[in-house]
Image (cartoon, rainbow, N blue to C red):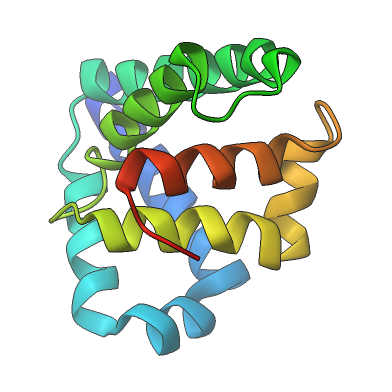
Length: 143
């Protein structure tokens, strides 16, 4: 059976959601609720191939820019705040609604949850904390 490129892409997205479900499904439903998780998954599944490519490219740009911003040691600086704006844009690909509180909370989770800290800090130690600090400034949310 031959699959079209679109069918392959739809299968790929479904695979990513299934993997995320295996890793974090119960946990994210407890934290955010089943409706929020479903809305995010639906938004992800409705992404076009072009949107997905932009989403992926943006994720790489965030990490690259964050690494350079880390050298400035200034989470309030122009480069760090650019990372936050890019991160917000990246989130809107999968979040139904954006809120500063949720964005700041996600940044805190990057520090509190060793899995997310490891993701950012594998590139450079301290990146997760720096991103969290920058996001707190960006969103105006106090710890």
